[in-house]
Length: 49
Image: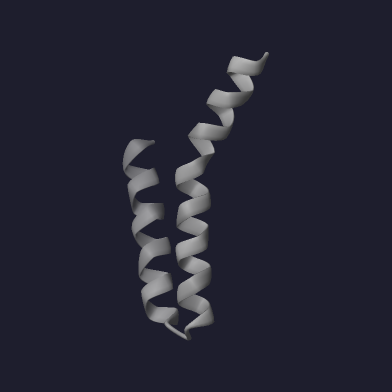
């Protein structure tokens, strides 16, 4: 159980990092950059599906 939990947490780290990056851009009123990052991630996910 511990190994599964650790793997689950580690697999989510890139998403937490991305969320922090977007939050920081929004706090700095850099909305266009935040939207571009979100758009890029959505495009990447659509390409995988």
